Image (cartoon, rainbow, N blue to C red; front, top):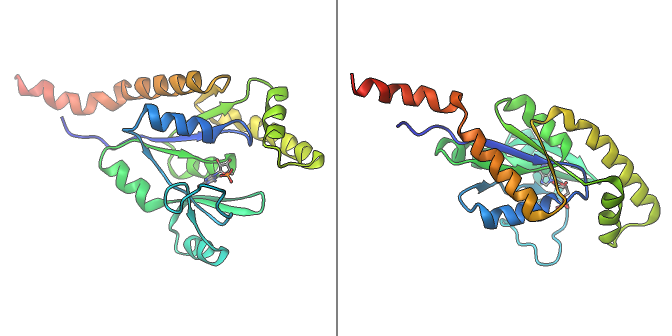
Length: 205
Ligand code: 5GP
């Protein structure tokens, strides 16, 4: 059967919901997925490695990538740029591998316009109290900042209706199981299977 193009999966959700943690666990559970490494202008955190966690760029370098249309999507988030390099994603999709992007909500909406066939998964917190706890738990935020982040999270949660699936992040393993189930179901869709399968049917005639 002819190998079809891979699926583009966008995993997004409000700040503090645990996208990074879920993605880390998904990498362990689903090593066959391709994980896009984003470019960013924020400084590396302890333990982060250039080319593995992010491609760390200066603002000039990042703006050059925007000008060269090298980014599939990009957004400015809490004072820094974040964006997805297009070439890696296209290359992986062409070889038939599924690619996952872990990005914030504004960027996800840009992908929606450029890749309407992508699968959009919204990771949601069990409730706002839990989200507040997680934002506070980072221990780096002052009270006004926490309030601002929560307000932003509320606005981001309202974007959920633009997504295909909503996955609750009550427990990381459970959330990953739900994502795995979504991908399995997506691969079983008749519209993906039937065109290539039709050719096989004719082989016996
Ligand atoms: P952090 O600085 O904590 O690593 O990431 C901050 C936010 O940027 C997270 O919500 C993360 O999902 C998002 N992010 C990471 N990479 C990208 C990207 O390539 N594009 C967009 N739009 N957001 C990204």
